Every structure is written in structure tokens, then in C-alpha cells.
Image (cartoon, rainbow, N blue to C red; front, side):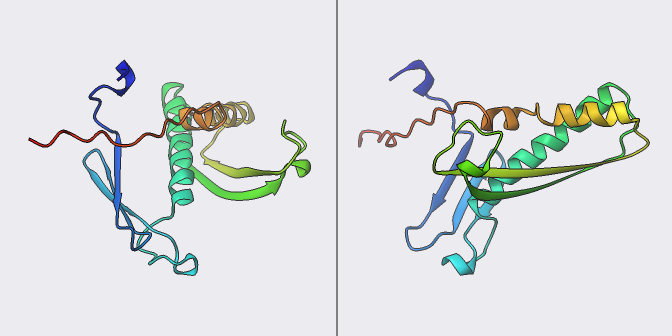
Length: 154
């Protein structure tokens, strides 16, 4: 077992029955529910996996903008981040390196309110793209999937 796999407590644990899409999520001291909409065969008991992905990016974007504005004492009052996910043909994406097949696209719209100068607004929009989740999603991601380690019966 490598040092990275040693007895580290998981950040998130997801449990569900094989009989439905509904999942119970434990993130630290918080309990959440995930599900699929009825139209996809779920029970619509909570957000779907892509809703959680967009939530993560939106929350991080808003927090990063707010932190920067507070540190720089900018007159920012409110932040609204609206997100959507879609699949597009790579050939239709001018700024994308990949030119074949389908790509995931996340559209992020940021609304900033308060008496900001044009320069402050532009700087906060630049900072929005530097939130840690944005950087994670646009970097190479290595996901290691492995079976859970069973403890020997005593």
C-alpha cells in the first residue's frame, strides 16, 4: 500500500442501494442526498451528479471572487454564479484543442453587483477563473479507482 493510500479518512462517502439511483452522501459532518430525476428513472429526491459538479464549481467561483474582493476592499456587494452543463461536438469549439468527438461544456455566467469600477469588475472576472475547482476541472485529473480494502474477519 502506498503512502497516499494509507489510513486517510475519506473526504466524502456515498452509499446507495442497487435498487434505485438515490444515494446518501456524507461530506464531513453534512448529510446530503443525490438522485436522478423521474424522467431518468430516479425518484428526484435530490440533485443529480452533474448538479453537484456545477454546484462545486459555482460555490468555489463565488467564494474566490468574494475573498479577493474582501482582501482588496473592493465595493462588491453580491455575487451570482449561474451554470449549465452540455455536450457539444468538438469541431464546434473554436477554443478547444480536441477537434473530434464530443466534449463536455460548462457555461458559467457571473453577475457582480456593487459600485465597482470597470477595472475592478474585469479583475474579479479574471480571478473567477482561478478558483481551485475551476483549476482542477481544467487540469489533468488522475482518478484512481480500486476495490475497498476488506478487513480480515476476527
